[in-house]
Length: 312
Image (cartoon, rainbow, N blue to C red):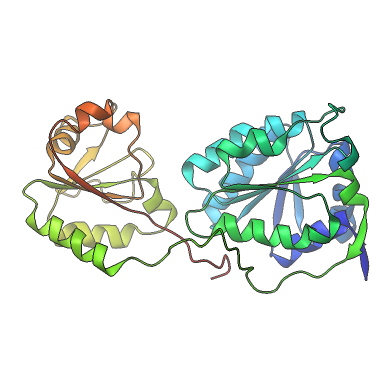
């Protein structure tokens, strides 16, 4: 059965179990909006700005644990979406952002509402695609969801020229994960590195456990609490990590960083071993990196990842 590119997109979203699409319409994606209306299998949430659409998809992903989906048009539509995309990238939120693009024949001609979407989003996405052939559309969307949700989650942009949404092709959506040679995220800990980390913690004189928002997003609060109490080490958290560990517990030193507690910052600066769980070492936490490392310390980071399959 032949479907238009727009119909292939919405059928692919249906196959992924998408419940909500957040977006704002425009000429380059109008066929996709028509296909959403015709299929009527998931709900479109109309926002008043593309940035709001991506932020809403981000919030949905945080709350539901599923991949958030946003739909924006070409040119100013996708440039408006950049702030939301960058936020999701920094916080490791799984998103698929579908953007419209001018027709294939117009790409590179400075056409009306043409921007280099792949180029401008490259620094703040996990991956991005420009789909120039309607026959590659379904497989690309499958890859987008797979990449967004697996390993360390993040936003994936799928840029689709207008003529691709209008072209016809046979629809066949992959049922299994696609093997991507250049993308094989590690989701199992290396036993040798784990043993080395345990030895470092066991021999530490001033250890500290430093946790962040990844613990909250990974629903790992119970595991973190058990681990900290088992080791007896003090712990501190970022603003995004607050709530992951009981704030009334005697081992909790309070929030870390420039707005944190005196005790937490002293403990972090003077620790000889730092175990970071679901957090990053940004300037709000360590201030000046050279001064943070003035006193020798060993650090190892525990990243909370998702299985390779988004449905697992």
